[in-house]
Amino acid sequence: TGPPELPRLGGPAEQSRLTGPAELGRITGPPEQSRIAGPPPAPAPAASCAATTLFVPTYEWQQLPDEARVPAGLEISLPLDGGVKQARIPRRWQLRVWIDGHAFWRTDVTRGTPMGELRRSAAQHMRQPTEAVELLLDGSAVRDEETVESVRLFSRRDVVSVRERG
Image 1 (cartoon, rainbow, N blue to C red):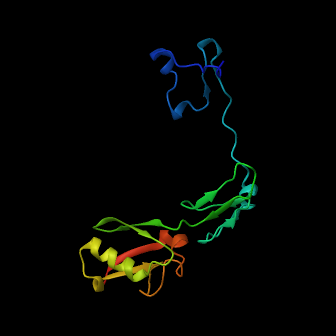
Image 2: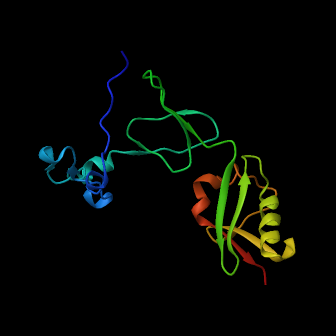
Image 3: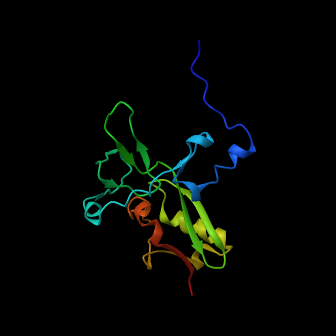
């Protein structure tokens, strides 16, 4: 015979017991077995947060320490056989920058994308000539010859800004 059949929610009365995130602490089952779970577990003490290591990503696979804090957007390999956990910056990723008066500018980048190409793309998005637009990291202009990798753009994408020169 096949695997045992899983119980299903029978009708609206049973389905209404599953009300969403506000009820995360509630464990549901048949009405006679429903119970309220205890409060959610307390957050980890601040001391354990200090023990975490900031993972500095690169475009090459690197071993991922168990205690590492990993920035969002990385490509991660978590082997199911207990092998080495690894992470890297994806070969292609999307840069998203808010430009006042023009909404979000989005563009795909790779490690070798020249910053001048990004400036041209931003200018096109803003419907401005390239020479009228400046690409900034932490408020400082970036040279067109630099690359996404050389300026460590993935790790600094939160401090990218674009402005009209003048």
